[in-house]
Length: 324
Ligand code: UT7
Image 1 (tube, rainbow, N blue to C red):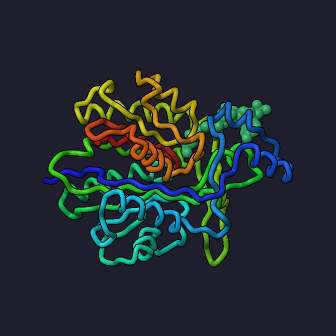
Image 2: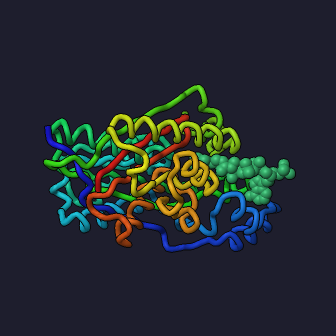
């Protein structure tokens, strides 16, 4: 059975940067009170990128996909599997993956979306790994992409300051040496209410509540406990000691969560890849965007070990251990 290795990465952020001060000033005009100090102290976020009105997730995803293909030295028609992780798809259907495929000007490869909210990219990566290792694809394009600003309630300061828009992508290719060493995916649907956007379209009308709602403290507790456990499980599966890990690429939700997890795992903070100060929480895009930054700036080097972790609505969480 072949193995699967990461052979290219890419990222894309919409050009408009909104600092905490910009956001606080805008929210004040709506009677919503927040401040740079609160946001930085409670989350570590300093700014986010917000897509222009009407921007589609597939547009961001296509930019990231092109960058990953170029980085891998591949053409779009070399790809035989496309998976997009998103909670803000362009349409009910077709999938965003099919729209990206069309934007890339190719046809024929399998293409589908994965819905696991902020764990989506880790779910997509584990799924692509299984398909490549089964010999059913040679080169997979995996994308996490979101226009999360489109589901935010700008009158709810507990959530609207936390998120941003963006896309990250990877190419996973069949290889003789293992790249993806182990993966653990988990969910607890009984906790769906603590983080959800519980709306839909029926009979041409929006039903339920289409905005993101979150019980921040409940999510915080579940996130740290499940990610610490998941890190141990994935390392046990691979026969790797936690101390061997060179880089942690966690879902970028809150610096306090990241620091708590690294402390619990005994990993120095220098091993954490942190982009949430600049990107905020981009849901399914956060892990591949953070990975792309550290891959391109030369911090990550071939042969090193990286632990990728996602956590979010569903409730879902997961870890993937990667030999770079
Ligand atoms: O991507 C999926 C994963 N998501 C996460 O992992 C998020 C996990 N949760 C968190 O990151 C944190 O719980 C939050 C950042 C969401 C909130 O931080 P917190 O320390 O749990 O704050 P809190 O909800 O306990 O709120 C503390 C205070 C409250 O005021 P009172 O009731 O003490 O008077 C809030 O009303 O902070 C207030 N507050 C704000 N103040 C200024 C909440 N949001 C804001 C805000 N600006 N934006």
